[in-house]
Image 1 (cartoon, one colour):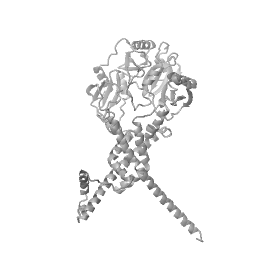
Image 2 (cartoon, one colour):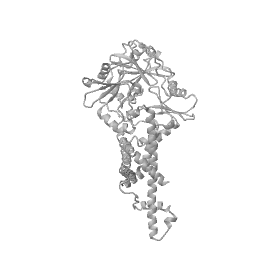
Image 3 (cartoon, one colour):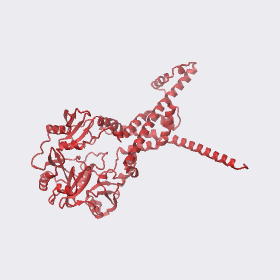
Image 4 (cartoon, helix red, strand yellow):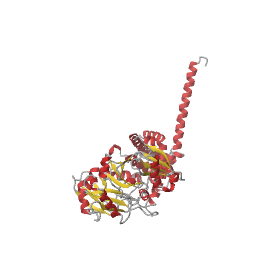
Length: 560
């Protein structure tokens, strides 16, 4: 069995050793760099203030004319014209609110104008670079906003802006430096290269297969490494006993492990049977092999093979149960919208509002742009589509569309608990807790997830937990047995976000960097031996082929 494992480990390492090197190196980069994304705070500060004086078209009529049954609607500006931006099943569309015209098919100069108003400081150097009907390397996670116009700037950072042809807004900004580090980090780590990633199922199958092979590589290496150490201990014990005329090592080989542990306690070295870089590979595997296996396993589980765990995103039925049914666009007539936005303007002038609904009552949700230079926590794991999130890390205001002057009612704890019960009609709420700090499943190092939240735990077969936001009347998160297990098998093992460590920086950075460097040493020390073995096999193969050709030629030549 040991020989079989050693053979498997050797050839799996030769085939995948370079991939492990890339995984560990890119993991170091990913501690501080992710895919380029448009910061939602920066976006909100750059878009023009909201002006609804020119709104003439009812949002329900605008959605009907566009053939939409939206579940979300944002109201903003397109140049100096108000615009409705509708989302239906994750796909976005835009309709002008003054004349009901569907926004689709921006011309090149119109896309340039949108980008210029978003970043006037580099408007003079902007040019239309390309129209993208299929995603490029940086827009693979923005398919719902395709097609896109890519706008290039002539600044020192070689900035690129992406304007959605569907919503007529800037949806992504990248710079030369961020693109460079993203290639070294997430693109390499996820094997996220465009030709492969465009084929989603193929990309997923390749990564799951690579993760499975990586688990076999790590486990076989750990097993062989320990067995080789024990074998060396047995050999040392046999030599010692043979010199004293004893056959104890033959009769009791299990004593070698005891002698190894005794040698460690006495400070005596227990040496690897290997030499050169393989010896360092052996030692690194003994120290970092288990952590490496945990990283590869958790990385594979993040791909959700066999759909083994549920998503933490609430289902549409659950969201609508808390909202009181689908979004009621008929309640959002232009006069009520203007009155509600006017009420918000008494505290701050909104740049964009989104219609939200709680128990059938419509509200407008608006965020206050951060003052320039205001310090705030920076999230490393921001997704490119995060600017579309309803929940942003900013001060917000909620105003009733029907009665703007009233404080939004119905967001106290008993009403939220009743709404949570509607989202789980076949289960009974066991307890409800208003969390003023994060728990082990709802947490965020940057502190951008909203607090307080109401956590309601149910007695259904899946032991579901729901998290509701009293400040917005939204169902934020769902946890059940499988997703809580995924939290420990994936997030804890892969990100090392264990309670007590994850929020303590730079301690977390030091621990994770040391472990990644150990994994990198484990991987790189296998490259030279792998190349030597391949060279030996190639030399032998060529030698056999040459000898075979020579003998064949001699047989055919009668004078030879």
